[in-house]
Image (cartoon, rainbow, N blue to C red; front, top):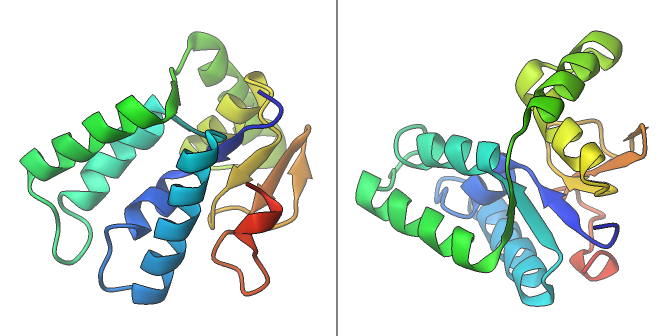
Length: 149
């Protein structure tokens, strides 16, 4: 999956967060490009966190029915990776060795163990590479989606 890009929850959530119009526009552009080119990858963790966030943590939240529909759409279009025992173990190593919080460590571990070299997220230090996984902030001023997908 070396040509794939793993997308963290925050990118999906901003696509539905009308209180952040600039980030919403960027997220929609990024997600559309990754889906169109087929390089976007998410995990079951991302889908679970997405549902919780968009149905209760953002202004103008989606209803549970709408959140369910969005998850169905992502399952049809995106490659979705499952969490495994090895991902949890690797995430624990990431928390121990790299001082990630555990949930961010699971994002990193899922990408690493599935040989996905890039994670789009605003939750990590942009440009950092840890054990072969590079973190890119798609909301940074100098970000150009054309360079990635």
